[in-house]
Amino acid sequence: MTLLLLQMSVVLLVTLTCGWLARKMGQTRVIGEIVGGILIGPSVLGRYFPSVAHSFTPHSFAAFENLSTVGLILYLFLIGMELDYAQLYKQRSTAVLASAMSILLPFASAALLAHSLRIRFAPHGIGSMPFVLFLGISMSITAFPVLARILEERRLQSTSLGTTAILCAAVDDVVAWLLLAFALTLLGKEGGSASLGIRMAGLVGYLLFMLGVVRPLANLAVKRYKSTKLSLELLGVVVACVLLSAAATDVLGIHPLFGAFLAGVCFPRIPRWQEEIRDRSDMLIAVLLLPLFFALTGMRTRLDLLNGARMWWWAGLVLVAAVAGKMGGAIIAARWNGQSWRDAGALGALLNTRGLVELIVLNIAYNAGVFSPTLFTMLVVMALVTTMLTSPILKLLKIQDGHETTGDLVDAQAKHSAA
Image (cartoon, rainbow, N blue to C red):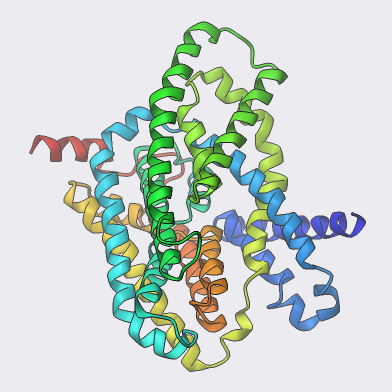
């Protein structure tokens, strides 16, 4: 326990320092926390001080992951709790089309690269269909929690741009997890051919239960308990319900994060309760648990595997394909719905964000024997660079913190609908 506490102290101090420096350089704090993890991980500390790096054992990683996952579950609940229903309804057509296009185009890019990458970097015996699916998922996924934190840091989570981006990311990731389940069935993993159908049926049933039963009951509770103070006992019940919802989606094979987000969506909109929950939980989540989460990304990255110009050329090609597919799909969809080039570009930049969710997918593919260590590292670099590009692109487009862009998204949507 003493060693674990010391390791947590070191990780937090390094990641918080790097996060502060990242903010000073105009980047999001998430990037600094990931870079801090890289400094502590095998790429830097493991190379120059291997004896110190070896103190971070698999047991330490497991403890970090469990703690940070609980923090992330609570954080995604807060994001869902603050989701604006009115903005969500107004942006429904843009969100659905942008989600579809930001999945289809990255998959098309992956299909074009798949053959060349498979013959060079895939382990022997991997079929083309599973490889294309895993590569397409890796290029199309959006880091839901990273995007949520970027929106919060820039105070965009309540704007129509932020609401649309959050909804698109949620749809993208649900589709990606379902495709991942299908890809695993092709490899004979996760319970055989019936697994995908069972998961989809379970997910649909759970969505209907939460939105058709839990949310109406929560709205009825608003009328009765609106004047009730949010006591410690009531807060404990709320947290327990969030954890149960996360556990339910985890059992379905999707991801506990989506259960937590869905619990937030169904939470009654009582402003005083929302403010109290945010105030009571934000400090612990932001200072302790989320830095551990993002630090794990860097601690699992092996930059030393890209040891040559040829490897970096292929890594660059993967990066260009991923950015063009993800941003291009979102921009085309947004423009189709009548948004300005600036708003479309901002949405594309936000959906191009990737992070530890991407790394989870990559680890699953690596453990399943689909990606080699070299290709795994290339895709990790792609995830980090695309996340780092988000803030500069938003700054270039003059997306101000807490303010809507010119050519308001709602007005653009209304004009398009009227046309």
